Amino acid sequence: MALADLTNQPKGRSLQASSGAARTRTITQVIVRAVCFSCAAFSIVATVGIFAILFLESLPFFKAVPIGDFLTGTKWEMMGSTPKYGVLPLVVGTLLITVGSGLVAIPLGLGVGIYLSEYAAPKVRKVLKPALELLAGVPSVVFGYFALSLVTPGLRGGIAWLQEILPTLSPVMPEFRPANAAAGAIVVGFMTLPLVSSLCEDAISSVPKALREAAFGLGCTKSEVIWKVVLPAAISGIVASFILALSRAVGETMAVTIAAGATPQLTFNPGNEIMTMTAQIVNVSKGDVSRGEIRYQSIFAIGLILFLITFAMNMLAQRYVKKMSGRSAS
Image (cartoon, rainbow, N blue to C red; front, side, top):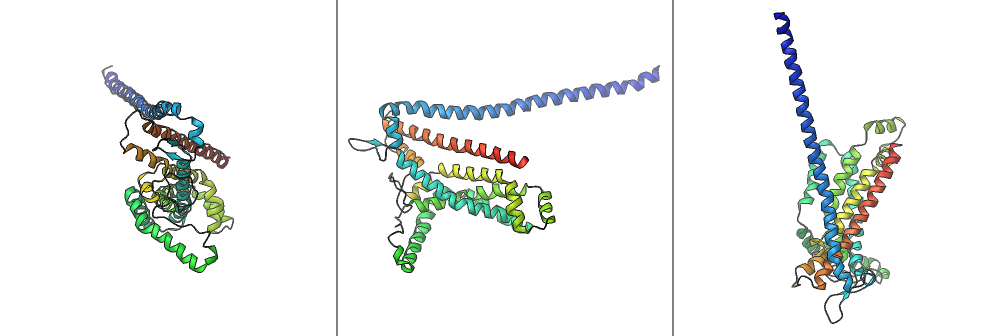
C-alpha cells in the first residue's frame, strides 16, 4: 500500500500541474482576446468619432452655404464682399494630383516589385529594397522644394526642347508656371513609390512556387509565367497597394502646397497653379480666423468631403479585392 501511494502521488501532482497550466493558458487567451478586441473597437470608435466631429462642425457651414452651391460651385473666394465657397476647384486640384501621382507611382512601383521578386539576385534585393524604402523617410517639405528646384525646371526644359523639334505642337503644349500641378503630381508619385513597390513585392513573393514550377513545366517562358500566372494570382495585393498609394496621395499636404501652389482655380491644365483640399485646410488653419466664423467652419466641410472620398475609395478597393480573391480561390 505504501509503494502504491508513493507511485500515485507524482501522477496526482502532474495532473494538478497540467490543469493549472491549462487554466493559466485559458486566462491568457481571454486577456489577449480582450486586448485585441479593445484595439479593434477603439479603431472603429475613433473613425466614427472623426466622422461625427466633421459632420457636426459642418452643419453650421451648410446652414449658411447651400450644399448644392458648395458641391457645384466653380469659385472659392473667401475674401471680398460676396465670398464664394465652391469646392469643385479644390476637388479637381486634388484629383489632378492623385491621378498624376498614380501615373508615376503605379507603373514604376509594379515594375520594381516584379524585378525585386522575380529577377533580382538576393544580394541585390537586400541592398535595393531598403534603399527604396528610405524614400518613405524623406520629409514631404524636402520633396516640395525638390519639385521647385529640379522638377519644374526639367519640365520647362523638356517642353522647350519639344517645341524646337516639333514647332507645330507648340500651341498644344502646356506652359509650366513656377508652381504647377504636374510637379506636385510627380513628387507625390515618388513619395508613394516605396509603398507601391514594397507591397507589390510582398504580394508577388507570396505566390506559391508550385504555380511557377507548373507553368515552367508546361513550357512557359519567364515573362509568360509572370504576366499570365504570378500577377493574376497576386492581383488582390497589387490592387490594394494601388489604392493605398492613391489614398496617400489624396491626403498629401506640404509637398503639394509648395510644388503645386495655392491658387484655387478650376483647371485641368497640368501646367497651371492649383490648390488641393488639404492645402486649403492648412491655409485657413494658419490664418487669423476666429472659431465659429464661416471661414473656420469651411475647413470641416472640406474635411468631410475629403473623408467621404477616401472612405469610398477604400470601400471600393475592399470589394474589388474580395471579388478578385474569390476568383483566384475558385
